[in-house]
Image 1 (cartoon, one colour):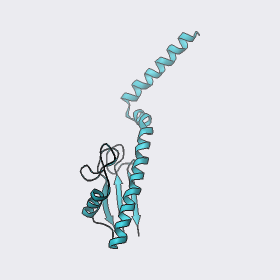
Image 2: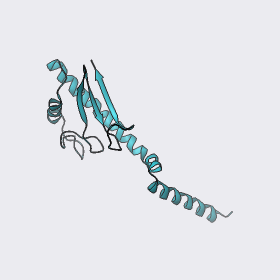
Image 3: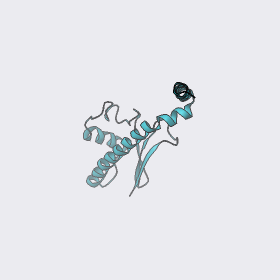
Image 4: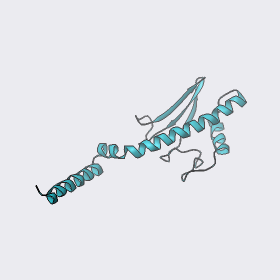
Length: 131
């Protein structure tokens, strides 16, 4: 087989994969996963930042903040350092969706809906903190 024919077959295979990736969601998800992984790691880093703020609040007031106090704490503590801003409409994750914070028992929960932007799905990112 000539070199030109081999390259033609390779180009056709790559083209077929790209078409498949654009039309089949499961394949598209696998191909986009690396960028989602980077966003998930960034979201985890933001969770640590939020956790530090909440811990500071807890040391001062001897309790976890309410949902309203959490949003006020974020607005007071975080300078906008991203294009979409942690402050836009309260607090958003790397996919532009709001984080959810609520107290649960003796602790609290922070959630991000993840790349699919649907609550309760397998790609949600969750921080559960208990005393």
